[in-house]
Each structure stands twice: as structure tokens, then as C-alpha cells.
Image 1: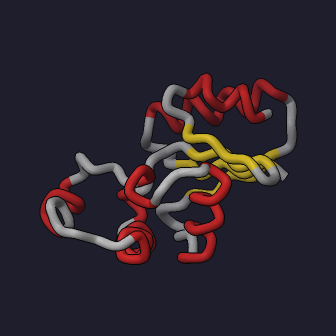
Image 2 (image 1 turned 30 degrees about the vertical axis):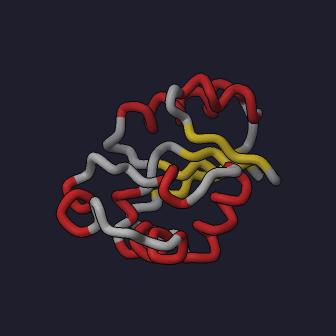
Length: 113
């Protein structure tokens, strides 16, 4: 089943949700700020996105700037930060079987459906 890692307060995430709803396909909404992905979930998402952990980080977030910016972090430490502070996770993310995309721009989602 298709999964949408969603933040209802984010405009791009809401646009991604609208694209999924319009597709007519079944999907599951994961409100990742409430249902925080495990470290292994994050690793799986990164593998499907084919990106490194730092590429999933919202580096302009205050949490990142105050706690992590400029520090030499391993991939494992970045994953730990994403798990501890899920607000740092780029959004929306759509996972469809063994592939995933970040919905920025939201039209990226159409390519995975």
C-alpha cells in the first residue's frame, strides 16, 4: 500500500495529499510528527529514496541550526536526529512499494503512482 508521510500543517504536504486523493488509489496517511518513524523506518525510507540521511533534513529548521549545524555528523547520528526531532524530516514523503519520493514539488508524487 502507498504511504504518505504527512504533516497537515504543511502546504506542500496538503498538496501531496490532494494528488493522492485525486489518483483514486488506496493509501495510508502517516502523521509522522505524532507517529514517529523508528530509526529502521527512516533507514528504509532513505534506501527507497536513494539519498543520504543529510538530504532528508530540513536544514533551515531552528532545531537543526541550534543543535546540529556545522557539526561533523555520521549518517547514523543524522538518523538519530531525524528520529528524535521528526520535525526535521523533509515532507511530504510518498512510499510506493520499493520506491519513494519527496513531494517537493508535489508533482513529484505523480511519478511514483
